Amino acid sequence: MDDVAVADAAVRFTEVSVGYHGTPVLTDVNLELVPGQRLALIGPNGAGKSTLIKSILGLVPVLAGTSTVLGRTPAQARARTGYVPQTDSLDADFPVTAGQVVMMGRYRRIGWWRPTRNADRRAVHEALDRLGLADHARTHFGVLSGGQRQRVLLARAIAAEPRLLLLDEPFNGVDAVSQEAIVSVLRELSAVGTTLVLSTHDLTVAHELADAVCVLNGRQWAVGPPDETLTADTLRRAYGGHAVELRDGRTVLVEP
Amino acid sequence: MNWWDDALHRATAEVLLAGALAGLVGVHVVLRRLSFFTMALTHATFPGVVAASIIGVNIVIGGVVAGAIVALGVAALSRHRSQNTAAATGVMLSGGFALGAGLVATQSGFSRDLTSFLVGSILTVSPQDLVTTAVALVVVAAVLLVCARPLRYTGFDRAGAQAAGFATGVWDVVLLLVIQVAVVTIVPAIGTILALALIVAPAAAARQWSHRLSIITALAVTLGALSGLGGLYASSRWDVAAGASITLTATAILALSTVLARLVRSRPTATARLRAFPA
Image (cartoon, rainbow over all chains, first blue to last red):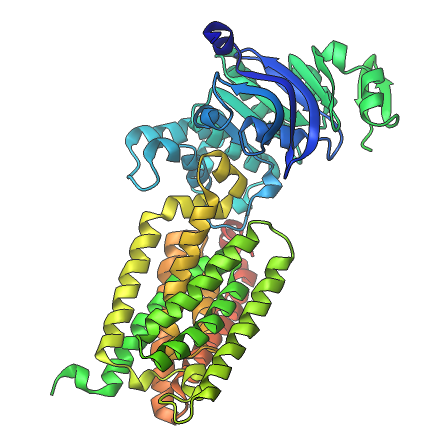
């Protein structure tokens, strides 16, 4: 086995198809991410962005092709993979505080029934502090703003100290302050070698934050540096020939 | 004379234990929006209980078996998250109830009549029933305590819990079985068609006053026990069926709590509280 090459890649997908119940949702995926790389997944609603993220987690089966994550199968790598779900997929009415949500990131280390240790409480405090929410540890999750909720979920992922972090639409319904806090923490994580994969509708964020972009819509249309992939031509093809404008020399997407 | 020899003493102990148990599981029923499923469980235990008394085994065993079939069936169906879950639950509810009613009708001179299954028979509680309820309360409390983290994670964020390595299907089954143990324990005393309010109302009332699970749970257990006690007192004072008066007391507590919660939140002095706990 080619140990060196496998260990080098955080994510390696070769000719991968993923989908549910044997029916592919997304095909022709070829990804090779080195540690610390920041990949943005771009594509319209239903393009398969969330499905791809879940397949990197090993929660959606790979139907064809070969896939390794952190040198193992996606499911085996899950212990070192962090996940920030879309905020609207959770039950915000559920009685949990921000601190309790972040502590969930430590459950895997603690075990599901053993008591928490000082190191866990410290990790929770530090993660909240990094996202500017140290004063909100005892606040009910449901009363936080959309941006604060997203920051809490990122803090939860950080508290687990992942080597690969997957974020599903982390900037949806997020205010400018929260977006700034999230982007700066993501840059810090990347600088210390954490690989990032995030799906987004926001091409500006993709341009500024990501060093690689993958354009999806049912299949992979392009992958590479932002300047080469976020072109009007590629986007028009992926989005079905409409809703792309160029502004200030940059590609801007008008929501389809 | 032994304290247990008085039927009213036994009934008092039973309503306290059953009320506390109902409040305890009710919190999870309310938070997971499982009221309808729990309604199906209460009705599905009915044929199991009747069949058990016909063939002469402990009725709790009959109830557990029938309830387990429904719990596992609904868990299997709800993995597909289709609308058919509600339909299947509804069919199991009335189907199970009809099966129980049919079984009762086949037995002439049946020892327990249909009414005692439907509205309960708290005054015929035996010392063994008390022990069963006490054991169920301890077991359910212990399971909920030990499994608090996975239940919190899967209840709050299913996708996140899966990604964090929790087998959400397994924890669903754990929770459904816990609810089922409580239902089978409570139904003989309170009644098939009345037990749901005692499970849901104290927890729904408690939810209006806190966002901390520990406080909600303590409050729901207290209100559940109070519903039982108040209902039993009303029943002996005005000579109405105990199951009915317990259910009415639980309902009244929820109504009162809802009105009080509105009043507290509309007072100007409560602005700080409102910010902490909006509706």
